Length: 193
Image (tube, rainbow, N blue to C red):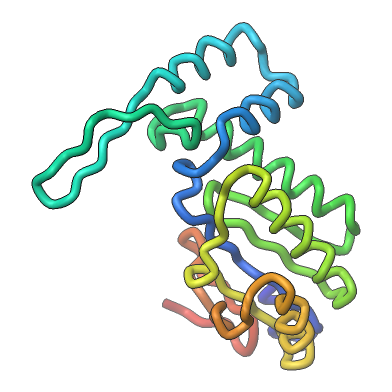
């Protein structure tokens, strides 16, 4: 991306933040994904049974609710919860790669990103992304997400592609950002922090 920005090669993309991603994933959908990817049923069934026996409580001020069972979400510290997010990210990046080999997608837990030099690919990628997120019960946090473009024309095309999914003024446009601990420069000279 910095190569594109430095040499003014047109490209654009987004970085999506998934709102409380571990807490919103549909457990049945996640189990189905893990089984379809070939993870051992002998390990997954006892694990999901344990997850389904967990209860949650909510605190408001000094008041605490009664324990309640939940069919959504996974404990953030649980090893298999991380496996769930890795598998979901793998499915998303694989599905995006099937749209075109001219798209680069990456996923790490609740941070998903994609880049392309092909304006026509933006709408299909966004459609695929929102459908997958919705099917899994997850939510894109557009206020913590951002879009970028190495030039104004690509940025305008991306903004237009976002219209069916979100009001483009809801999502920030950045020239540089800190993404998963890395300095990313999308437009202009490389930044140092």
